[in-house]
Length: 77
Image (tube, rainbow, N blue to C red; front, side, top):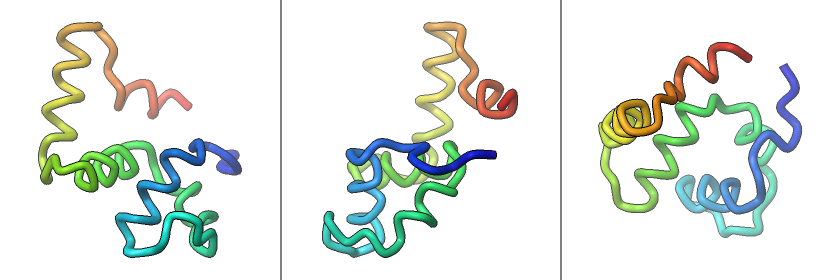
């Protein structure tokens, strides 16, 4: 699976900050790019103040409202 530039810079910045790095510290970017979308989604939500568990709730709302199962989409790749 190709992971280079899987996530845009704006998301990578959240992950850097979540790990206690300054937002332009790139030394863990390869690791961040290899993370699964569910893991990244959870970390971005946590960094933005939505504590553990909201990732499942929000994914459920997206499925119920838009009919899109984000976990199924990821598993198809």
